[in-house]
Image (tube, rainbow, N blue to C red; front, side):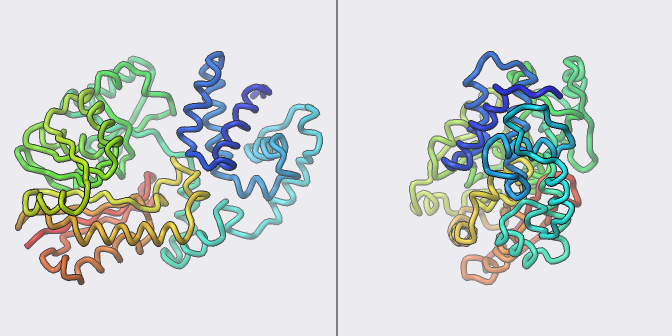
Length: 395
């Protein structure tokens, strides 16, 4: 593949914003691509994919590189990908043989998997022998997975529709609403997306709404809704009959839900900002189903958000665990007697998952609930994101 200075500089600019200014990779890449309308599809793809992969392997690249100069870092990454470098002056300090030898001699697993030492040690402590294979799986590029909007089409019809645009996909058993793309492409530009025929949502994430076992006519509360991806799935599973109360502490996130619902043809979603404990108390015993897709470390989705591992700390994980338990101590009061609740995270750490549920069930607030089942979804086993999903029933 031929390299071009202007696209490499685009990558440099994005990396500086991510690592020097602490900005989020997805937003940085979106803004970077908009900055030069002359870039074609191939250039844009190169910048996006290269930036994500360099973020993913940032620690290893820095270890192998002769310096932290932008062209040395890029050149080291390019050699790691199995490419050769052009005879540019910018790459003069790079010795491919030295880099290869340094890599071959490397035995430190945290550097090899490009994660902070503290995170590697935490993973070993919490997952034991499964950790090594899991972090290796989480360092692979994520597949693009679509969730078919069954309010507007069927999986087969959407599959055929996309194939007409040369977007080919396949079905995986156990995920009834999912289509996995054979090759990465920007599906947001496709007319089928603009018509609301699908959302982009990982296959593991799609199992969360399914675990609620909703039925048409129910009253469902999605209490940590964010931009509403799972609320939309819940509404589709309810055949757009009943009510989905979409709640979050951030009003701007719920605004995104309104726009997405309109595109998807969903009319049963009502948005509500959580302004404090009174908001929760007013909804006591009102929900047939409650979804708590709680804030978490995000370690299960490192494949699509590789910058997360550089933003996390032991302190931030401890803080989010405290928030998880605070939510569990308060929000389940909204479930009717006989109703059910699902607690979910996109984390692989037991301390954010089954340990939190165990602590809740042993508390005064949890004495009315019993655990029906839980799913511990690891990337190494499913090929999709790491998730935890627990379904509980109020007695």
